[in-house]
Structure formats: C-alpha cells, structure tokens
Length: 294
Image (cartoon, rainbow, N blue to C red):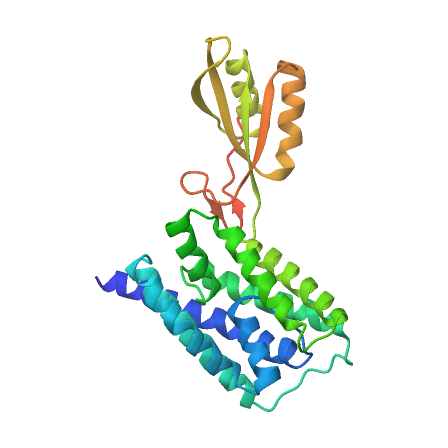
C-alpha cells in the first residue's frame, strides 16, 4: 500500500507539472498574442475577449457539469486524476496571469504560435502520459462514444472546429491561421511525449521460408522473432507468420535479408507506440541484444 500511495503521488505531481507547462504557454503566448484554441480552453478565451471573464474561472465552471456526466463512465482513478488536472490547470492559469513577466518575441505571431504549440503539446502530453486529462472536450467525446458509438476523434474534431469558428468573433483570419499552426504542432508534440520520445516498428512477414528468415534476422540483425500461426483464407494452407519488433533503422536491413532469402515474402510494416517486456525500451532505445557470432 505504501508503494501504491507513492505511485499515486508521483502521478499527481507529474499532472501538476504538465498543467503548469500548459498554463504557462496558454497565458504567455495564446492570451498575450490573441491566439485562439480549441476545446474548453478556447471557450474560456472567447469569454475573456468578449466578456473579460478570467479563463481560470471559466474553465472551472464549464467543467463542473462535464465532471458530473463523466462520473458515470470514467474509472475511479481517471476521475480523480481528471479532477486534479482541471483544478491544477485553473490554479496555474490564475497564478500566471498575476505574475509580472513577459517574453519578448517582437510581436512575431509565427514564433508565438510555435511556442504556444510546443508548451501546450508538452504539458498535455505529460498529463495524458500519467493517466490524467484536463477535462472538457475529452469527457464530451467519451460520452458520445459510449452512448452513440461515435468515434472520439470525430467528436473532438467537430467540437474544436465549432470553438475555432466562434473564435473568429474576436480574432481575424490571419490569427486563426497561426492558431491552426499552434494546434497542429501541439498534436505532434503530444504524440511524441505519449510515446516516450522513441519510435518502434513492427514487421509482419509471411513467407514459405520462415525458418531461414528467422535465423537470418537473429544472426545478421540481432533481433528475435515470434511465430504466429496463420492460415490462408483463400488457399486454406497453414503458414507461419513472423512478427519482429525493430528500430526504424533496422527495417532496411530486414528488407535486404528478405531480398536474399525470399524475395516473394509478403511484408507489412506497422507503427508500434510502446513495447513492454523483454524488448522494452531503455532510456528511449531498445535494450541491446548481443548479436550471435557467425
């Protein structure tokens, strides 16, 4: 129980750090340079621009009914982390608005958009990686997915698009374009943070020479392979499918092996977001497998 409590505390600490990074970029670049944003954060910016309502208050008020809805389908741990994320984000936004600081970027909206995207993506990525959310559109999307079967991505896109369209009430088209740059960059950074900063590829190989291919991969590249038992849907013939997890740079090496051992092999390459187990990443890279000597 002591270890479990410590893990929970570290997760809450990480969510606090993530919301702090996000809030800093939100105040220093979005608010200071009149850049819009999607989701509840975007609605809070509209309220700030048109009604002069503090965004920290708006985000809290708008998230309360969403939390009530989300209580029914969010897991207990996720619900606690979401509450913590919403509260800490609102507190950070409130604090940063009252701290006397400024970052001189010579009124360059492109730099402001890039920095806004980096800070937002880094902060949200940390929050997501440690099991939290900042509430808002995530809860709405999850609710529609459960009740109506609508994909989460579609709801998020529709909600963000509507908020950005409303944002044209206080920003011009040029600022909207910079906002889209910030949003796109934020999504890319979130993906990098969530994947731990490393990229892994999975390779499915269907070949009649599975033994020779597996041996060559082990000896020449230093990676192991797993046999998956398959059957041709048309032919009905049993086949051994090789599954290999590789660094991106090793993909070409496997292709070279296949070109020699079995040029007719069918290969599918897929993105792998995380690997856990004997080949788990260590410090952003695979644990090295000692290559067998020929």
